Each structure stands twice: as C-alpha cells, then as structure tokens.
Amino acid sequence: MSREFSFRDEWTVAASMAEVQAALVDLEHYPSWWPQVRAVLKLGPDDALVVCRSLLPYSLQVRLHAVHRLPDLLETVLDGDLEGVARWRLTPVEGGTHLRFEQDVRVTGRLLGFASYAVRPLLTWNHDRMMAGCIAGLRSRLA
Image (cartoon, rainbow, N blue to C red; front, side):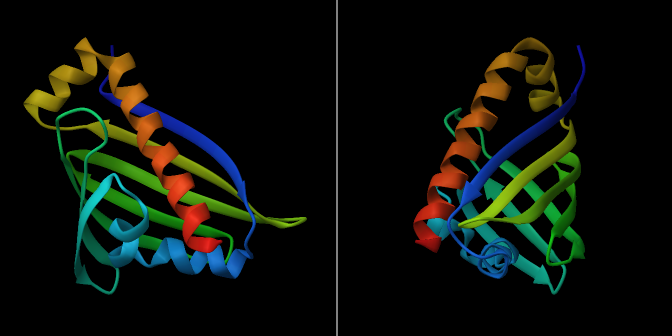
C-alpha cells in the first residue's frame, strides 16, 4: 500500500468563471462556506496555513503555496501533513462553470502515514465527505 493519493472530482456551478475563481482564491474566507476548513492563516501573498477536519477525528495542517492563478487554472503546492499539488481547472459551460479538482499528495507524519496504509478506504471516504462539503458550500456562497 502507498502513502500516495490521487483524487479527481468534478462539478458544475451556476456562476461565472470569474465568480468561481474569485471565491477559490479567497482562502481566508473558506471557513465561512467550507465547513471542513476550520482555519486559514495568511502567511503572505502566495502562502497560507490551512487546518482541515472532515468526519474523522484528526485535523490536517497544510501549508499552501500558490503556483498559478489563471482564469482557468488555480494550482497550489502543499506541504505539511500532505505534500503534493492541488489544482482547480475551470471551464465555462452553459449556465455556469465546470470545475475539476485534482489532488496528488503524499501523506507525511507517522500517525497519518500509518493510517494511510491501515485504513486507506476510510481516508478516501473522509476526503469524499470533505469535497461534498466544498461543493455544497461553494454553490451556496455563489447563489
């Protein structure tokens, strides 16, 4: 078993690409609409520390560094409890914007690293719950 995870999620929201992009780059306000994002500390123009907790009783601390902030691509490098990359790809569609979320990460740390071997399906389920909270919150925020 691996400590590496690749996630792919896709949704459509009834908002323009500019509105979606503005919400996604505004990390400091994530806790107001994304329930699983518990705290965000801005460290600089391109850096933030994010604390996430989904349904499992464990909080992840991840440092994000913005790599791309294009109208159709938002990409960040992650380090901390997860190391890797996360990106949002935005495409205009009739009635809104199609979002594709891609995350390729490696779990770090002893406890979480062990869990990635022992309960991989549970961690994947927990991620799915987190992303369900994301899209529900984003749709609500953009409504």
